Amino acid sequence: MRVHHRPFVATVIVCAAVFVITGLSNGFSRALFQDAPGVGNHVWRTPPVATVQAVLVLGVAFWLAWKASSWPAVAALVALELVSMHATWVSFRSTYLPLVLVLGVAAVAAGLYVRLWERSRAERAAAAEERVRRDERLDMARELHDVVAHHVTGMLVQAQAARVVAEQDKDRACAMLDGVVDGGTDALGAMRLMVRTLRDNGAAAATGDLSADLLQLVEKSGLQVRANVELASDVPPELGRSVLRLVQEALTNVRKHAVDATDVEVDVRLGAGAVMLSVVDNGTARPAHSGGFGLVGMRERVQELGGRFFAGATGDGWIVTAELPLQVRA
Image (cartoon, rainbow, N blue to C red; front, side, top):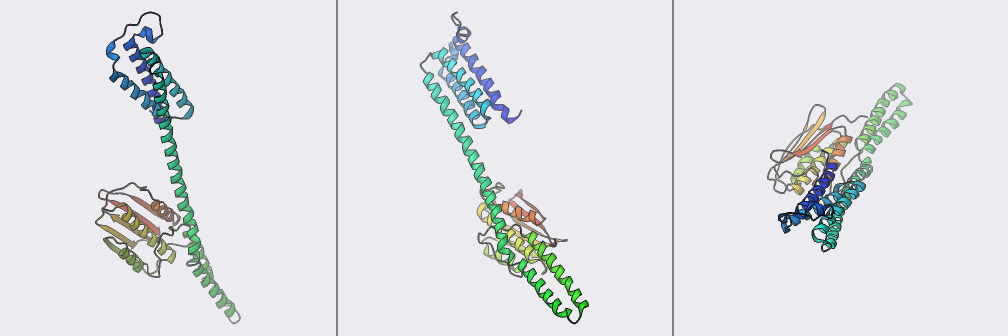
């Protein structure tokens, strides 16, 4: 049974139950507004039975206002209210009719409030995720000078040298153009790789030594970390920045969401054509969306790099893994 059908099935069941109880307690002739005297069972006309009926009706009314689609919910709420007022009239005449109306309105109002609150929360979460993605794009402009400008400067130097050499040796000058082409290809690849970067929240600055940067990051994390870093010296700088920031964000998440963690392990190594990293802790497992959007930025970055990303609970804690391709050409 689909979830959105359940409130209406519950409405039918509750309406039928309230009518049957009204007939049993007052006589079905009175429940059907017949002139004949009703013969009822007074066992059903007790405060506990009335309380159960009220709780069922109010609970279904709240559920309809909270979960059901608009117009079907209105029809179901009207049916509930009519059945409730009918039961009240048959049992107590007009004595409790105002109370039935007030309680019904209160239940519907509470359901609508919860519905609007959940919708607002979902919209805020979507807006926050969009802000993260927008910040990732804006940060790319800050890194263009550090990475792409390096390639472009090299291209300019080689082109100038080729122009000078061309006056004396055209063949040698033509051979130097290959370096210009390679530099342009590297620059284009670097631009595509830097579409996503982490937000500017104290991100660590990268130097030319990625292994040293990672060890320094681990040392400054304030956590008990066992680090295993096995990298070659020729990791492209744009890829090194991504590795560094992914590890930093993972350690930040450990500090924020795994305060009981006593063991954290960082492993970064160079595999066959890719850099593989993992950050594992033994803290209490937490939801994948723990009030922040660090994982959103990490996943965005890895996907833009053409890699693979996973974050989730293990039997003893939490793990973040990523595989980033080493090839940076377009």
